[in-house]
Length: 345
Image (cartoon, rainbow, N blue to C red; front, top):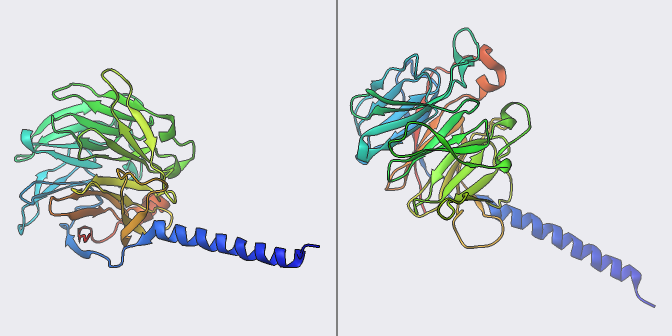
């Protein structure tokens, strides 16, 4: 007769080992780096609120845009902040900034998503648009309307001057051909969408172009998913594949590829408040979930970033969480800054 008592005890031990193994695997896949990177805050001028869009030039010049009024600041290395563009009725917000250096253009997106930041607390109804200003003079060079019903959020610039734009409302990526006059749909994907309410319903947010100049990484702010979009053959629809992760990202926003091909992603963390900078090897050949390496945590609404050739990362911390949760009744923070991170391997 079999020893059923011993058999059950053995099965119980094996079950416990499996649970422990699963827990250890999850811990390895989502782990903080051994040492936090060097972190330094660069204060923004008094009166400049809610920084969002950010870009840099090869000489280290920084450009910062405000989501609340469309103002764009510029700072040369070691210099003071100066106003490149003061904002206007036409360009009233800056959620993304990207420099097209060969053509001397600073591109940005201007959706009226932060109308609640205005003194009367009203939501805006102005149509979103894509724009370009002269990177040297701040003169407005281009204004391109976003197709009706869309909401341009983040952008990335291709080597030929073409632009890819995330459309947070219509679960798609838009494209502006070099020298083009209107945005067209590059790819539309049901998996980009969310039927949830509020912030959880915001679709495509961050976008980044891989070192191959062809592959796009796209994240979805509400659902916290991450995708790769690869161009098809001539005339074919681009392919979309989801990056398998050990957990959903918490309100992912701006992201950029580092020179080594790994993707740097910001987690805005509207719910927990623990904003993070994470690194994911989305282009690697390994199978299974891609580990999420936490490089920095405890950040205040990190929304966008730019990555220099030397690996230094600049992050805009918008400090928006209180306003997003409480609306116009929330107090505007007294200070704002941009954060410099020096990352290790």
